Image (cartoon, rainbow, N blue to C red; front, top):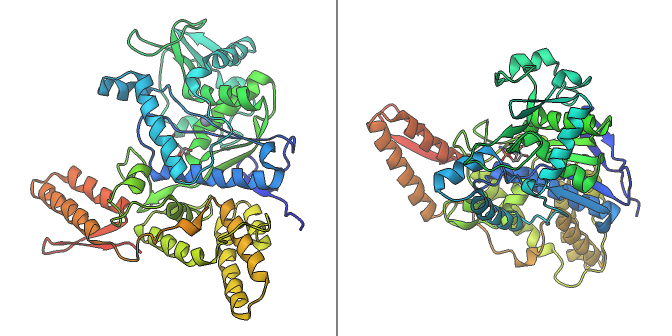
Length: 470
Ligand code: AMP
Ligand code: ZN
């Protein structure tokens, strides 16, 4: 069976391109991982799932032993310092605890373990080495215990985000600081106070800036130039632009990675799900609490709900979407293979869709066409039934939906009574907040409900009703 060519939309060129790895025997992908200070939300789950499917597809196309996937763990960051201080624990305690939950979350979402999960704090030496190269080649300067990247020193800075320096200065919230030569210059290293975590360096005791971490970890594990670099669309600027600046200038290369891939946002009511907006649901509560639909949801349901939309499109997160995914899994379950597979093939039209810039929506549609075929086969007692069932099972496996035979019923179309109780409790709390004109709290509760897919309607007579968003 001939294999279709993999095509990838490259943010660097803004076109869909055929994927040609530098070395097909060693395909290399780097994805920016979590900052481990708090539970990850389901917006963060989107890149985890999307790039896991790409990892699985690359393994299928090039052979599992020929693909390296690096997803880092950012375990030094000002948010980590602040949270650890707040809780009166060390940063190591905080990052260990958070990382443990993160690892359980991604496993429950059916993600394979990446080939490597390097930690920033274990790559300080490489960060210092890159910074020293940048200073030596005139791309960085030390001032006041800080080291800054000299943005105007790089000819094609802004190539990924396609912004000119003037536009960036106009659009960015630029930190003004006396030690900066140019407005856009960004921090590679900064001094640490006595009570802050720090490492000895040629510029005094300090800690790295965020961007340098990924340049160091990708270099350490994938080399100066590699194939694919991924993350959410919000990372294009400044994070990825700055990673490119650091790595290209330090190593004298034109490119850091050949293909840059970015997933769209998971949204609530048209707004990005984020910690700062308060409209978030953690992966942990979705999987392990009874808040949503009265059931601890199977990770495969969340995964299918997410993959129903192409990775570059925004997804509006609604309970209805997840209930639909549960129904889809119930429809698929009777047709997956129950015994040893006779083939490792996946359904060709499915693979073709997946190879077209990871068109998971189209690929899933093909699986339902295959089920119709299976239904016909079973009526006519056609022996192709077994092969088709095996191909369905393998195809679902490429999406990370495995062992569907074990799938329990999952939540039904309607929310059960415990979900009603939770919604009612939140509504009363909101009414209480409104009665005392605490609008901030009342809005926060509205957002919390919106994140669950519950839409409120305030009526003229003061009553509030709710409905499940469809
Ligand atoms: P952060 O913890 O904000 O650095 O995010 C970790 C990863 O999740 C990055 O790749 C982000 O781009 C991605 N991300 C954060 N919020 C969302 C969202 N609402 N939808 C999709 N991806 C997101
Ligand atoms: Zn990064």
